[in-house]
Length: 624
Image (cartoon, rainbow, N blue to C red):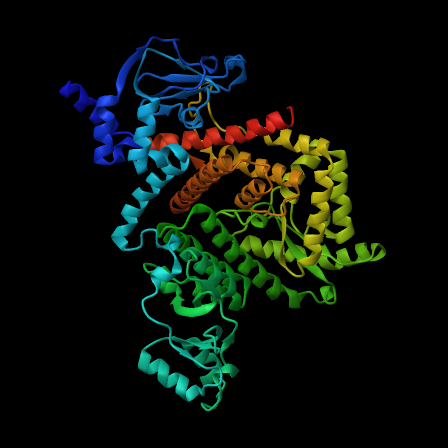
C-alpha cells in the first residue's frame, strides 16, 4: 500500500494543480483516491446517467470527449484529455449531469474521488478550489509564477500589477501654489528630491514642478526667483488613486509624456512616483522616449526613437505587465510617433490649411492591440459639404500619401490591402464614410464582410474625435438592427479555426502555427460580432468582453475564460515577435508548440478550446 501511495504521490507531483497542494490537503487526498481501469471504448461519464458523482484524474491512457448526438468523426468537435488532466469539474460544481460523453480512447487508468471527498478537498485546499473555479486562469497564474521567479533575480517580479501605494518610499514634498521659486528650490535641495507638488488647502495636487521644469522654464527663460511656482509649474498633474496597478501609472505617464505622477487617496496627495520607481531595472525611460518622439525634428529621428521600443517592451513585460497592457503601451507609443509625423509633414502641404480632418486608425491600432511588428491601417475623415468633397479630397491625398510613406520609414509597413489614408477610398467625408458603411451592411458581399472586419474597429488618432464617435454610434445602430449582416459576420468569424485536430490535439505544420490568425482572430472577430449585435461602444477586445457581461449577453464565467486564453495567446505572439526580431526573421507570428513545456502546451490547448467554444456559441446563436 505504501508503494502505491508513493507512486501516486510522485505522479501527482508532476501535474498541476496537485503539485502545489497544501501538505494536509495532499495527505487527505492520497488515501481516498481509487484507481480504476477502463478498456478502450468504455464510457466513463454519460449525460443520461444523472448528476456527476465522481472526480477523475487520468493516470495513463487517453480520454475522448464527444457530444452523443453528433457524429464526432465528421463534426470535428471531439476532444481529448491526457495524463494529468481531470474531469468533469463543471458538472461536479454545478451538481448536474455532464454535457458530453467521456470515453476511453485506449486502455485507460483513472484516479477517482467521490463527490463528497471532492467537496471536502475543495474546502481544505485553497489551491484546489482556485483551480476548480478558474481552471485556465489558474494554469496561467502558474506560468506567471515561473516567469516571476526568473524576474525576481532582478528584483522586479510582478511589480507592475501591484498597487501604486506599495511603491511609495517616502512622504511627498509639497508647497503652496503661491510659494516663491527661491523657497521651492531650497526645499527641493534640502529634501533631495527631483519634484515638488503644489497642493490646495485640502491637500489636493494642483501642479507639479520638476528639475526638468527648472531648466526649461526657469534657467533658460531667465525667470526671477521671486516668481510664484504657479507661473512655471505643470498644472493639473497626472493623479491616480493609491490602489491603481503600477502598469496604469506607466501608461498614464506615457500618454501624457510626464516624468512623475501623483498618488492620491480620495483625491488627497499621499505620494509621488517617477518612472524609475516602477521600472527599476530599465535604464531607458518611457517618458524620455515619449519626449524624444514628440521633439523629433525629422521622420528619420522618429524612426530612430522607435527602434528603442522592443528593448523597452521587453523590460516592461519582464516586470509583470500582462500582454494586453503591453499591447496598449505599444499602441500609445506608435500613436505618439504618428502624431509627430503628421505634424512634421504638415508645413510641407499648404494645400491642407483650413481643412478640418481627423486621422483615423482601423484594425489592431483602433483596438489598441498593436504588436511589435505591424502594418498600417489608417484613413481620414474630413468635414465637407457633398459638393466640396472631391476637391477637398484632392487637397488631402498628397499629404496622406507622404504620411503613409513616412510611417513606412518608421517601421509601419505599407498595408498590402491599401487600407491607408493615401487611398482615395480611405479619405472620405463623414457622410461618405456613413454611406460606405451603410452599403456594406445592406449588401454584405464577401468583400464587404472582409472590409468590415477591419474598418468597423475605428478610432481617432489625431484631430477631432467627435465625428468619429458619431459615425461609430450610427454604425452600431445599423448593425444592431440588421440580423442578416450580423449572421454573415458570425459565419465569417468561423473561417479561422484554432489548430485542433479530430480529437482535440494541437495540429502544427512544418512552419508551426500562425498564432495571430489561428489563435487571436477567433476571439477578436467573435467579440466584434457580439459588440455589433449589442451596440457595445468598446473597440478593445477585452473591453468588449467585459461590456458583453455587463449587458447580459455573455456569462461572466465564459468571459473570464476568454480573457485568460486571449491574454496567453497575445503573450505568445509578443514572444514570437521578440524572438523573430532578435534572429532577423520575418515569420514573426509563428510559434512551434513542440518548443513549449508541458504546462504551456496544456494552456495552449485549453486556449484553443476556448476559441472553439466562442465560435461554437456564435454558431448556435446564428444557426450556422
